[in-house]
Length: 254
Ligand code: OAD
Image (tube, rainbow, N blue to C red):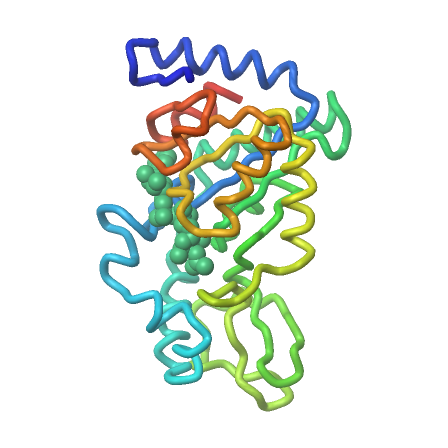
């Protein structure tokens, strides 16, 4: 394992991984809340994390929505406001540029960006092919007719919002206890099994099945690289661990 903390100059570890990326024909990046932290969006765990202040079971679960849809929507409306004000940072932009370069040089499916984030910052940075495992803050889904639509109003004029059919709308995100969107999961799995390098960026890698992708990629032959401020559960499986802010490491790496 090349670990940028253990006597290797960080620059040397970044260079070694950069060289490996230059050789790879298929690369996957899995991102989590840490990549948006430098844009001012709080992570879930760790200091200042949302789950330190709020209970996931009261805000991000189907039972919570049944119990108190207004409370759940107030929280999502607040998060939509935070995401709207935030701007993509150098980490998001480096990934979008890497995607374009990989596609130009190595073909359309050479790079797959899989994210657990719902904030839309990868889209705004210019990433085109984003596999969203946990949905999208900017989508709303009708609990009656099932229609999914894009809604970018911030704040929403009425909480909880309603569909034209009269039923309640819910946020287009995945809640605890719900399955991941089938298409997104299938795409993520397929790309992970083809990957030669699997980047794990700004995620605690504690929420499954998303966190399992890195292990599946490794079993299928990929080398795993971690970019994170802190130690994470995935470090022991990684060939490279780059410790530091994604917004500084990714532009140098990619
Ligand atoms: P977490 O909050 O669990 O983890 C964020 C990770 O980012 C931590 O490992 C931090 O060390 C790291 N980090 C923070 N700032 C960073 C920075 N500037 N550069 C690099 N790394 C940084 O967030 P996720 O792993 O995304 O799911 O959480 C996974 C899922 O749990 C979320 O999608 C959400 C949550 O509950 C649902 O809501 C279904």
